[in-house]
Image (cartoon, rainbow, N blue to C red; front, side, top):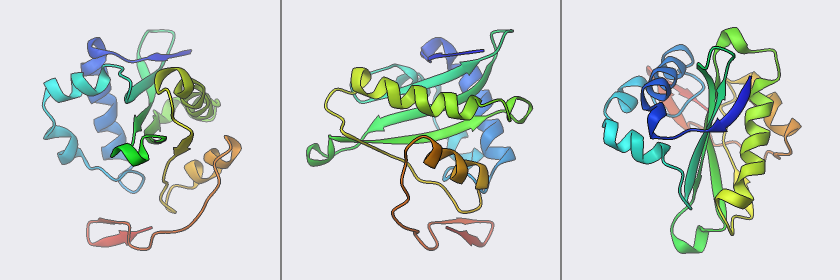
Length: 160
């Protein structure tokens, strides 16, 4: 198992895994499957093309299958360009409990200085309904600074 930068050639595998994440873990992500399905292949390719403002890493298994992912993007406008946001952390259930989520998050953290020059702060958010993520991020150095009540709504139910 290894972690690498994803690129436009990974569009199908990325889309498949992202849809799986959104369908299987609706209380863990801000997006839903319909959001993902509304994004054109061209836009996904753009997002998978590493740039000075964003990158996506993937965990690849011994069969060369994408089994985990994490994305990072630089915030805008210019006054916020020293900050980046980590998104979409997901590991397929059959690959969990192996430390792969932590490897992905740490790889993303390590990639930031080279990939996103000038970024000094890396943030993320996590729903209270995602206990594994809530345990993961502090192990990787993230510090909780607050709770946003009603930050998302899934099927009529607010989640924080």
